[in-house]
Image (cartoon, rainbow, N blue to C red):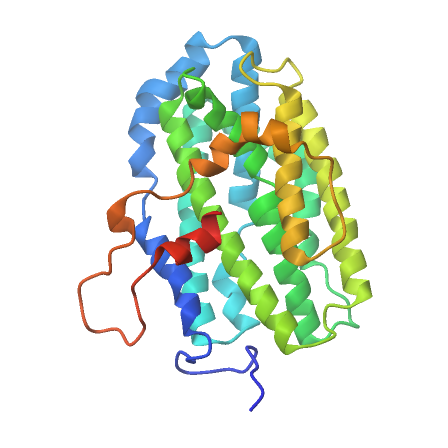
Length: 333
């Protein structure tokens, strides 16, 4: 019998039960907004507001707004994915991922408030570069009457996974985490970025695995027209992200960073997307600069705690719950 991930089930299909690993990994990294809020309010926020110079405080605040607009306005995808792919395991993992998006949204809303950005957060769409970001991030919602259900779902999944989960966030994560990495404060904010970024990598990996399953089961669905569309949208997203970096650094680049390294890290992430989607599109990327200046960021996201991999105690589940180093490597490498 031909496999079809779009076939509705009322139980976990053994052919897809391996997908539950993404939910298990999310549970093992579970946290709530309260984990970081107290220290941000008592330490990091006063440091940004009262002690940082205009150049650095502008960079931090604009990065926070740039992340917040993604986490708060465009992240309702995973919780409803089962409506398009009615597999039980997709619904369960999607619900777990959707729950983490709520944590992200509330955490960055609280961070924006702690930094005194309530007005900026409420009027976020009035800034042209941020409005442009939302416009390209919502491309996954665009559909055509000519699309079949499967092609429409694949298109949405590709654009959401690529643009929202990877292209739009990691440059700001990088900038904010760079302060703690260079011993310039913001340790709690950096920890929040690391927790968020690690989970976005899990979301991205789950999306990519679903994409590959759909492409493998539906030969020809990834046709020239779809590749042209995705290529066009990736180019538009890259242009928008470059404009956003210009806006973030409008009052200057922090002394411990260079604009070149931030753009190089941006291009690294876009090239990763292109490679994972097998698209013949590339962005200017310096491997030596990545190793010397950028690699610390991605290296810091891979879990290292031994009990992250420990099998939970209990015998109630029919799904294998042990996670291996290979499972984690697939996501974080």
